[in-house]
Image 1 (cartoon, helix red, strand yellow):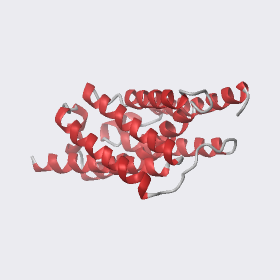
Image 2 (cartoon, rainbow, N blue to C red):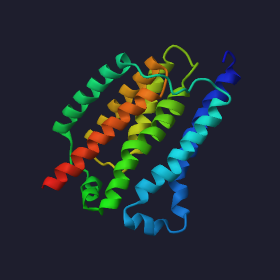
Image 3 (cartoon, helix red, strand yellow):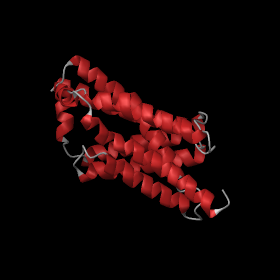
Amino acid sequence: MNSLSDRLNHTLSCLAGFIGWYACFFLVWFLPGYTALYKSGLALSFVTAVILCPFAVLAWKLYSRHYAFLTLGRFTFQDFLLPAFALIVLTYIHGYFAQPEPWLSELPQQTPFVKWATILSISLFAPINEEIIFRGFVLNSSIGWGRYAKTAGIIVTSGLFALIHIQYSAISTFIYLFIFSAILCTVRINNGGLLIPMLLHALNNSWACFVLFNFSAAK
């Protein structure tokens, strides 16, 4: 992408992927029966697995027809272990400063079916679609824009990633999400693919679900 028009078209394509994905949050409100789905506790699982994840994968495929900047990449322990350790440390530190999040306290009270649907969506489908959109499209939108483009890309991506999680209310949680995203952005840039960020994200979310449901069950 040597010309300005090529860089601009690429950036707009990346932003279109993010905007389309974000618009899905509002479109689902108009689906018949969504209110009942929300009351049943299955709205999160439905939106994540049935709407957001398929949209992200489809957008990825369409993008890949024109650009070669968004691949799954390959797994190497060298690229995996250090960021995994960094996320463990981040989670440990966040545990000291974390404040209660009301919506999380409601999840363990759901039926077993809703619990498992929630765990599956948070541990599998959310990491897939969020990595495609954030460490994929949003981060890629900075490609070709100069010396500080990568740094700007990490900051913008991490800021949007934190802000998109509007279900949270604590400042400490948003700081955690920003740093979490910055680590995954760095992994994506160094490794070149989405596979390792997806795995790290999935493991992080799986551990969060384990702590949430087991500690709540023990109370």
